[in-house]
Length: 278
Image (cartoon, rainbow, N blue to C red):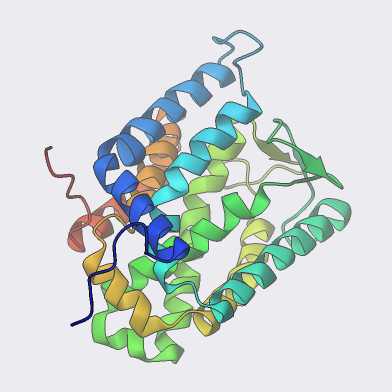
């Protein structure tokens, strides 16, 4: 009879994945609720000039908080990350940097804009951590739509456009809040809470490319199986709703705030607000 594999004998990747699962599962409420709530308060206090200079918009605190909130998505996807998927994510990281560079140097496709807050180390005027901000939007939208579509998600002609629309919807929440706290500003302003509609034309292009690559790179059946067994896989989207929905509500950006509530409702419909007592 084959002996059970002990922790010591477990392959390094499997061991790390299990430990990461345990870490996230044991701290779900802290990661998905406490961190974004504190993040929203800290960002608002920074925007209102209530925090002293070392703490106000501190880029390293910001990056640490974002990284913690991304843990559920990272842990959830880790077991289905094949070489093909890793190559696809690497390609998307390169694409993210490339299109951002074009954006800040030419104004295409998002519209001319300037960063107003230090988002950590920069390379060529681009935040090094940019994929940490962009790729989870695509990943969360993809996972949520797989759950919402059910069997209809088998049709790529339906799946990809729905995910693209979900990504754009998330930016309709994110960008107004980011502009309101001063993360960045568009040179010509915009009718949608300071955001020009050209930004969303750019996001349409970005989302189509990113979703198509992600859909090709991931094994959809493996992802669905993981979604069924991993209750915390969409907790990063819970954080998104709390953080950016709260900031939009504070500034009276009621359409983005309502959209954030809509994503919260979608999470509730898919039974993803389930933080068990410990």
